[in-house]
Length: 401
Image 1 (tube, helix red, strand yellow):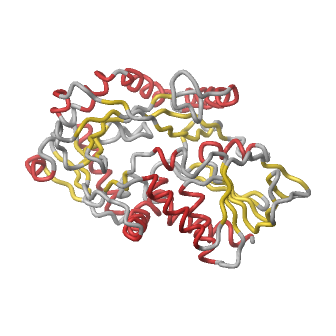
Image 2 (cartoon, rainbow, N blue to C red):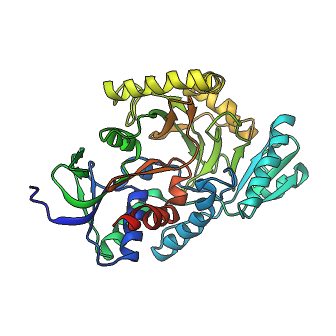
Image 3 (cartoon, rainbow, N blue to C red):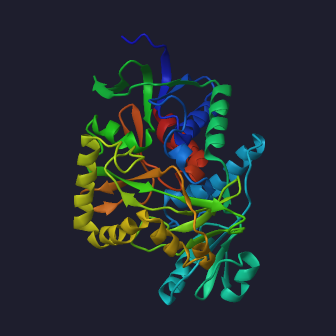
């Protein structure tokens, strides 16, 4: 018998999604005893604290997806949280520019999705671009997204920890986690809880697999590297993005801004072997490598063209010259800057369906006995987290408590 106090709900993972679920549960049922555990020494050590801080507007996503359902609302909710906690929000907006007739044609799909998703979005001809971002260039037309913004992921995570504790939740760090099943119930060794929520980010499928779940999935991690320069060398006022390739889950090399006056180019999307491999030469394990290779083989079967294009386009971007050359197709003056400083990398762990051989593009949540598992919550997971967490609480967890 565990010596830990009995909890009604135990949440694995102190990232923004786990915190959002915990807050939503306690707001709905204040009498619940809810505890969050995390293997790290504090909250948001991985995706929640290492993302770009972009508050996405919600126009990239298919209207029938969970991403579309929650991104626009999440943008508004994060703004409220930032205002309440006096966290800076840079109201910069974003332009999505084109570099060819093919990309210009794809702009219509993004615009249509945005309007269907209720996003504040405008489409303009090139002669208006100087009004929005004079340093950018476009082939013919561009999108203007006024609600895209920048904030501080770590400050947001810390604010949510305070909110969770204020409504009665508890958090423990440095916890080693292993799920097991006995007498038809899921439990976590060393902890005593009626219900378990697996919100472990890049480790979520591994924990679920220990229960016999998620056998159709494997995880392939991609390293995202940004480089920065002072904005006085490149005085952008907006985020500048390309039109994403339809066969690629990533948004392409783009320009973002920081709250401390920097301009960033990136990211790369380099396939790597470790889910927490923040260096190209260390940080991976044999189990990570096995899963990454399994996912890669599945992609070669189902989306060989897509994977091939990713490898062909991304590997050269490890060199600064290649990354700058790519970014200069959006903002030509990027070529004039000789010193770009490398930022600490982030990792996007992409779930692959090994049966279909395809990347999973939407959020995935599955229930199993007395547990709920967040198997895929990649971008815009940070922007969407608050309403997504509320939906998980109301639709997946509370009906089973």
